[in-house]
Image (cartoon, rainbow, N blue to C red; front, top):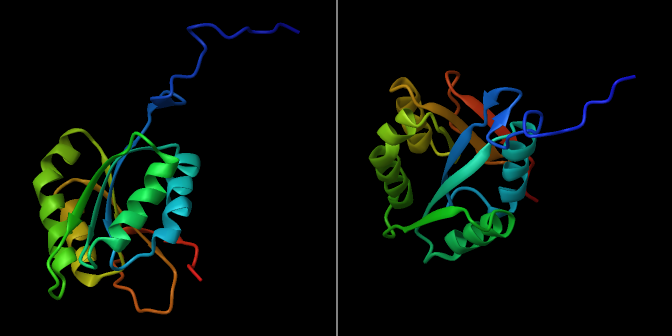
Length: 167
């Protein structure tokens, strides 16, 4: 039996998986809507199952930053070099949602140009609507949320990742 020893031509480039470029993921997290307890399950799914590289996280919330900080801590504990953009929104109905949508809109063309996958972590109708619009513009877009008792906006045109329930 002939053994092939690894060298520069056979080593696996971490930016590719089986000759296919590794997907880069930008997270948009509704911290008022989703518990930071689902952060590890989300990262595991993206990094292990999809072999994707999470490159940024935009986290919006309006609860004086408590949930934003918890999300940031969970993400950075697993990915110390992750670029995190925290957005503390005013205490208004859907204030965090609007902040998240504005951030996504500002970066949408770059996400499309750089072929980044946008993962929106929310179960809110307004944010799900923005995901639908991003996908319609040509952005690779997924929605993720933890299973729970609250009703969830669903869209048959969007791939949705159901994360483990947070107890």
